[in-house]
Amino acid sequence: MELLALLILLLIIQWISPFWWWVLVIPLLFGVIRARRGVNAFWVPAIAAGLSWLLPSLYYWQTSGAFIAPRMAAMLQVGHPVYLVLIAGIVGFIGGGVAGFAGFSIRQLYRDGRSS
Image 1 (cartoon, rainbow, N blue to C red):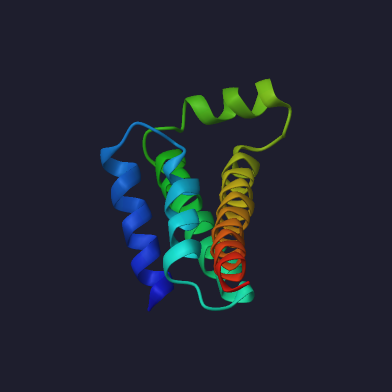
Image 2: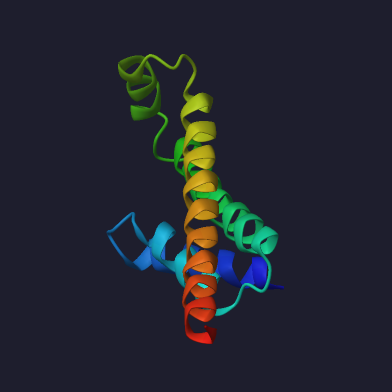
């Protein structure tokens, strides 16, 4: 349930905001506020952020980006444009997971610091 809510929130914010870094801020806040274990603090935001970049990039490549994607793939020397889509998903996955775990670690740090 958290995964779906986080995915929908990320997709909505990416749709209305011109900034890409929301894919890091929202998982960080998730890690601080909601995550109860380190494993969930990494995997839930990682999957949500990865899908929130993978699905739109796949959609844009198939619809309006059919002209620019091969040029971008050639410029970045990644081969086929589908690799751009996969790279976007992987970057979102790693960024979201690290941000979620960082948020969880920040909460643990402050919680442990107050108790002593």
